[in-house]
Image 1 (cartoon, rainbow, N blue to C red):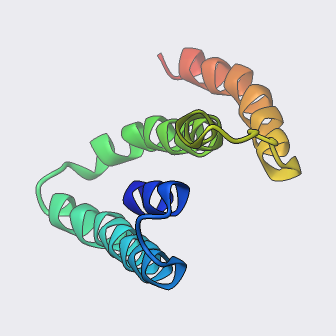
Image 2: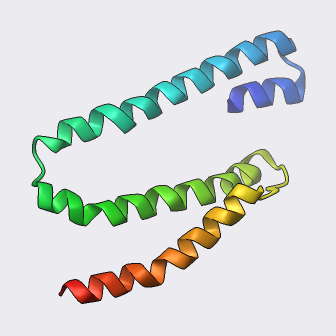
Image 3: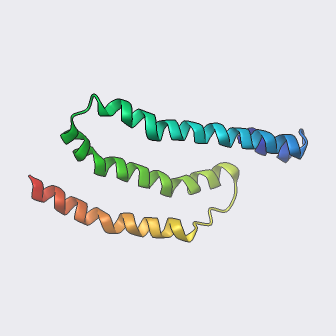
Length: 111
């Protein structure tokens, strides 16, 4: 993706070729994401105790949520574009902020 952006920026490659490489890069990225989302949890489910998995769920959800919130800002800095922060990201930030106090309350009640 970065290569396609640089090729279009300096006009060192026809736009059609840059588009093909961009689509190929996105396809490989999504293929890797699908592998991580389906295969890795299935592999670890045989080795991790079910009680430990339940305890790790809030942490996994928080890491995933933070990644989804931070990604547009990081990519905007990488490609030097406006972050824009779409309405969905704004709602996601509010959801994370609202869910943090109940998470600490539930954690304190358990022990």
